[in-house]
Image (cartoon, rainbow, N blue to C red; front, side, top):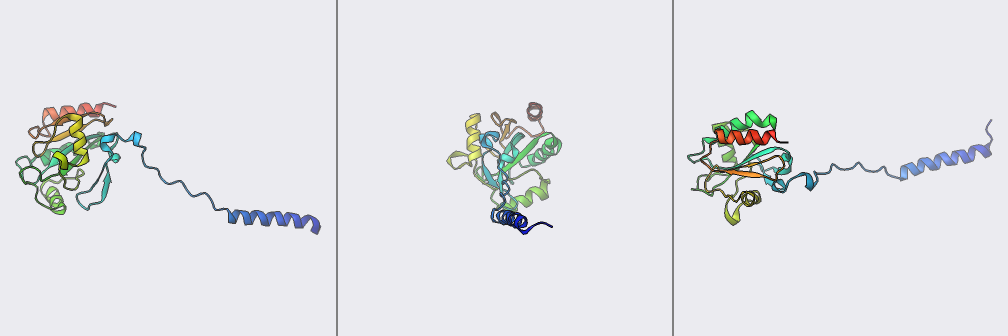
Length: 199
């Protein structure tokens, strides 16, 4: 039989340990940290609202991909390029291409609708599934920050709807293509395939 003199200190130690465990909260789990700025190129360090529902979208989610940025419009002679852009996205997205559409009313007033109307038009008319962002300006001092940065990188600013910028995987190099360059043209496809092949 354990004597009381032995049991009492042992019991006291067990009780004090249990009390200490209850009093000391467990360390909270570490929150998921966003990608370090160094892993996301400057040209993608922007956030825009999604066209369909205005949910904020961080462009850093596309870091490491080849990104084709296009300013779009619903009532333009080049609007049929939506078909070619969607075809590029469908064919090359599994290899790392993302197409980003930025509706803009800057040229000829050819994108007068609200975001919801534009989203419905794009999907219902052209089956657009590539990411589309909220309507914004893409030229001059009012241009959204990504287009300002792309203009600085390339020395080329949009002069009409469906101007295109192709950003490489590193995010450090961008090439501009005018509205006349069709998405399915040899020039565009060759540039995309070359950028996808680079690691």
